[in-house]
Image (tube, rainbow, N blue to C red; front, side, top):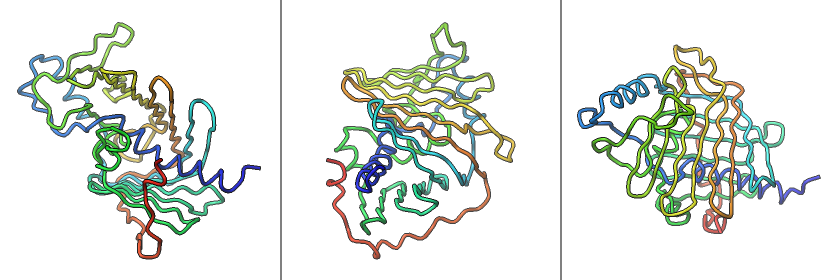
Length: 275
């Protein structure tokens, strides 16, 4: 039987891999200046992607399984749920034992919070801390874009002219690619212009971020949503993977996030969790 301390370590790893994996050195696509995109076919592709992608105010993932894997070893699985209020908050609850909530992660545009209920400790920091710790260009918008199957571009705050080109990959007919000072990236599409794969490579090293979306299913609205999301970040000596298998979700029904009374918890030093 796996010891309690080992289980707690793995759940810590799971929750703190989420922002790392979801960032991959990326900043979200905020606004595309279509007039500056030189190639008309590329402009049309970008427009169709933005038109086809999900536009939910609320997304309530009531039931999902999270799986984390380090170097194809030390795999950990846990039931969880996730609530997203667009542009406001992402709330993740991990419940490894019969629905009993043991760990909480909440992301807002300015900060993130991690609560370990087993030890009655709360950790809080801003994204600058994560950026300095992991050397990643992490933002709330990036996490939100990747979790909700939306277009983003690595290393770009504002879209400049001709950021994208049509994908030059004979094995995949539809998609986009781009290159800037730090990154190269590809975005692959399925026939209805939904994003199926994203890959980002750091030009100066072996670091790579990858996400795939499969099993697009019914949301009760006019647009589908991927029920399987697989993330991977790797370099020459480490590979981290995170999978989300969504079992039940509801879109655009008003949700209220659980109240977090941080005064109930001891204040922890987040650096101790991210050694």
